[in-house]
Image 1 (tube, rainbow, N blue to C red):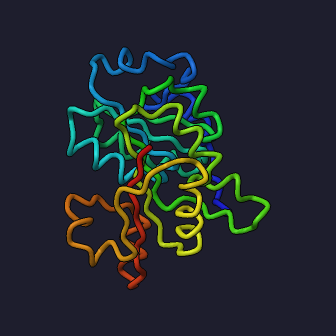
Image 2: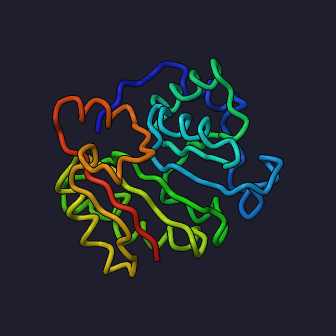
Image 3: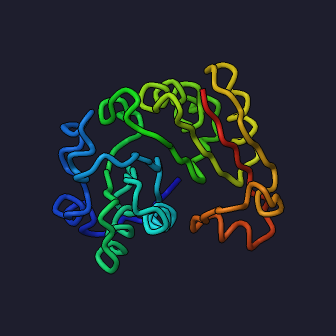
Length: 212
């Protein structure tokens, strides 16, 4: 995936009050940063931030952290927060492979993966966010009662993701192959930028909810 470089984005991110700079130091103690003991939900690959900002607005009693590794994308979320600051949301710029260095065992109540990079080449399968390698990482940080929600328009990636569940000992709770025509699964659905774009073209959106 090629992204257009945004001049000065790294500098803005490194000084933004909305971005946690020393994120590894907060492991097992994220509630102190938020100043409360509310549940912690994270989105891995938050993109421009629309989804997680909407979630934070709808659920003020939940703490949110949006994770994004591309500076040129994260900068858009920062710009939105500068217009509408949300006290229950912070951002982190990092690679998802570091996730177990940032959150402690059982510290996260819910994980969102939305329209993740499909990494289509077989040799890159371990980099896919719903791969068993990443599911093993999520298993370490997710609470016993926690779950993970994954949405994509990529049929091949979704098929791959479903195949990974048994290999990683996760349980499929709910699944749909056409989210926007599934009344039950659409209840309370919050769209991402990609979801709005793809669904407007008639593309089906795939979604599952999983737990251990």
